[in-house]
Each structure stands twice: as C-alpha cells, then as structure tokens.
Amino acid sequence: SGGKASFLVGGEVPIPMAQAQGQVTIDWKEYGVKLDISPQVMASGKISLKVKPEVSSLDFNNGVRINNFLVPALQSRKAETQVVLRDGQSLLIGGLIQNQESKNIEKLPFLGDIPVLGQLFRSDNFQNNETELNVIVTPHLLKAPAPDKSDKSVK
Image (cartoon, rainbow, N blue to C red; front, side, top):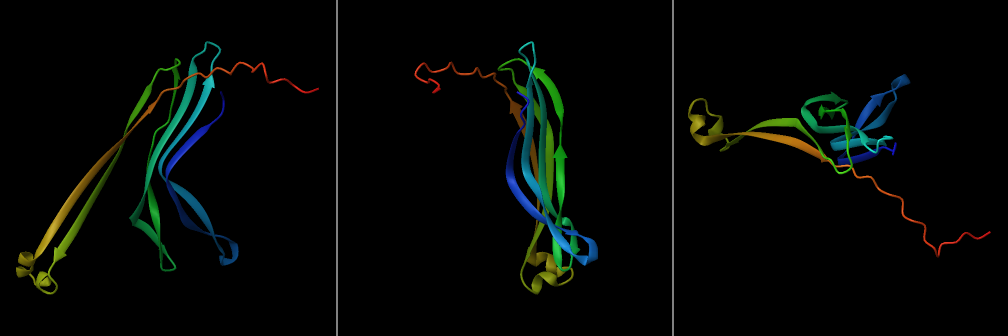
C-alpha cells in the first residue's frame, strides 16, 4: 500500500542537451509502453488506484537535425485516472490509439524516373496501421504470512 509500481516495454533514446559554454550533455528519454500504478488500501478494505498508461514512439519525420545527427521527436499518448476498486475487481483503460501511414515506391532504375511513362515501371505501396492499447488492471489484497513457529528470534 502506498508504493509505486512501474512497467516499461521499449527502450531509451539519447537526446543531446545544450549546456553553458557550448557543451552538450546527453539526456535519456524512455519510449514504448509504460504503465505507472500507485495503489493505496483504504480503511474500508477497498483499493484506491492511480493508473497512468503511456504509449510513445520515435518519430524521425518530425525530428531535429543537430550537427548532422537526427534527433527523433517522441509521439506520446497518455491517460491518467484514479479509481476505487474492490479486491479482485478489474479496471479497463482503452483508447490509446496510434495511426501510422507509410508510402513506399518501388521502381526500375532510370525507367521509373521517366515523366509519364515512368508510371508503368514503378509501384506505389500505401500502408495504414492502426494500433490500440487496452490496459486491464486487477488489484488483489495480499495478507501477510503467518509467522513460522520454527522461526525464533535469538536473544
């Protein structure tokens, strides 16, 4: 009760940070699927939960170029809620949706670059991926184990 639990599936990306006198330091930013949970057991025996899911991904299309290095932007989707649940009752959080569109052009060298006729020698591939993250949290109250009779304190 009262402790915070964190879960991350993803990684960390280095982000250069400008400092005084032209120096640069590296700051690491997490990306991927992250879930923070802060439970608190109430006097009634119910469990108050603060739940913060986050989904982030690297976005090189909106990145920033610094000294010939491309620093990616982070696309994030976040939610935060606080609920009161009974032992074993579940909470479902949904709606963290990500859309990714991509276009890939395949062509024969030289022939695919000819105006008008080049269309006959190339293929445009469009792809749209939609991903939704759903989080289900089910808290359980754990009882402290009974003291073992063979476990005696040494005085």
